[in-house]
Image 1 (cartoon, helix red, strand yellow):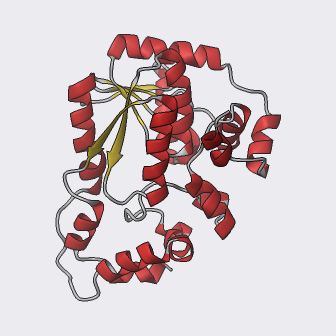
Image 2 (cartoon, rainbow, N blue to C red):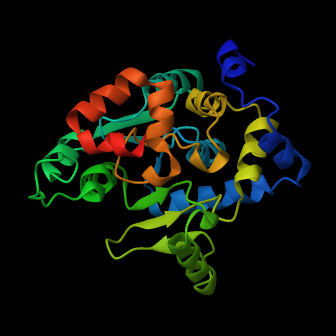
Image 3 (cartoon, rainbow, N blue to C red):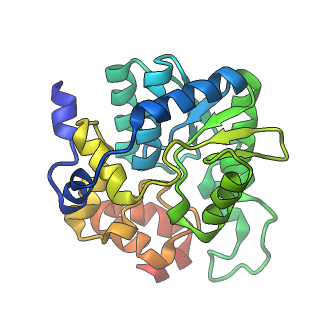
Length: 264
């Protein structure tokens, strides 16, 4: 195990230990499913730098070591995430493409107006379109209509319904979308503890933002490594942890978006 892997290991935290105590998934079968999906649809793997897409990546690389990997950059990832993805790309020799959003998320939130105490007219910009849809269109044009990702059913009611429908259609974990994209998540029915157990079992290097959030006291449900701020999950204390752990970045955001301070 290389030095980078030792520094980035999740360690023997309680969540990882619970995952290690559970029977592991049949990963050989999952790798076969990923391989079949890529052979049928081509496409790419969406990698956010988070734990779920990390496990999906670990499985996908066993199916195809050269699988295209795309990181959608909205300009507001944690600094550690950029370094982590660069280090992981070098360590694993990833076939990685970083695709920038047309605008930064911060630009869109400033233009929206609702984050200011003085503006009342809201811009009609879609964060989802800018952050996901448009970069994904570029990725699909390059690599094909298939998509491997790390979505899990237990993360939201909408995802639970989506994956329940995939079972009914006879393709568990796979969804066919109206834009002709076919997606597959090899971890769709995993719990968070199983994700951490897999990471610990295989000593997979993990984004250091998780460990920093744990040290700051963030509860498990608030340990997220997506954008610094994207108008979501603010009720989970996102700005509180940002203020404690990344005070300079926090100040940049509240200078641009004064009402963000209300969540800290």
